[in-house]
Figure 1 (cartoon, rainbow, N blue to C red):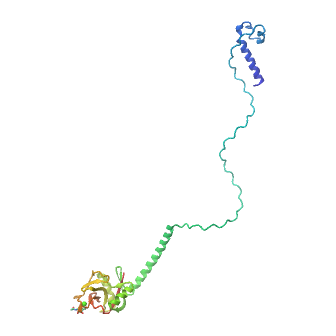
Figure 2 (cartoon, rainbow, N blue to C red; figure 1 turned 60 degrees about the vertical axis):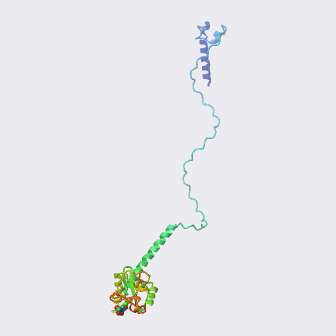
Figure 3 (cartoon, rainbow, N blue to C red; figure 1 turned 180 degrees about the horizontal axis):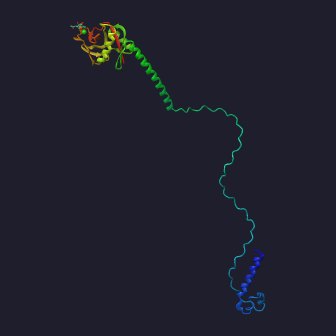
Length: 261
Ligand SMILES: *[C@@H]1O[C@H](CO)[C@@H](O)[C@H](O)[C@H]1NC(C)=O
Ligand SMILES: [Ca+2]
């Protein structure tokens, strides 16, 4: 509070106080013109007056002194990313690491094997087709999945059977008219009266012919009057150049025709 404000306050307070003591009478005429001091000198003091009303709002005071330093505040958010620094020098070469595990999965391995297998299969099929052509060109005859071929030699039944087995096939065993015709065609390349053994016999039970596998035969092409088991000594079967069958002794020599399936 400035000195002028203090003075104004004091003066104002005195004026109010004088006004409230008019009941006294003596100072009635001088209230507005003279000081309280002059009144109080002529009479005895009265009772203290009532508290005055609040005064007018004073003029804004001067700026106060700086207060004590406050407590430390909460840490603020991180600042913005600064500009990139200058490029540093290149570091020295590190030590060589250990060999890592291959990332190739088993599926990839299997895929690769499958691709390899497919290529090999295609090569094999091409090769198979080539040898089949060679076989047919060399006298082989095809019927369905079977190929009939002769080695051009004549042997008894036992040797003829072994020859075909050792070659990976069996003695010619036509089970249909088509297969019988294929066998006959080979015979016809060997001239008239050519004959060949078939993979059929009645070794087990006379009169009941079976394949070498033991199964009963499902197709026959017997010549008229055959099988007659002449002299009770005909357990093997030949195919003649007309494609007809006849039972004959097994020790006779006949062309070897094998079938491969
Ligand atoms: C029986 O068949 C043989 C050929 O295997 C033939 O030589 C013979 O004449 C036939 N016998 C009869 C009686 O038909
Ligand atoms: Ca006969």
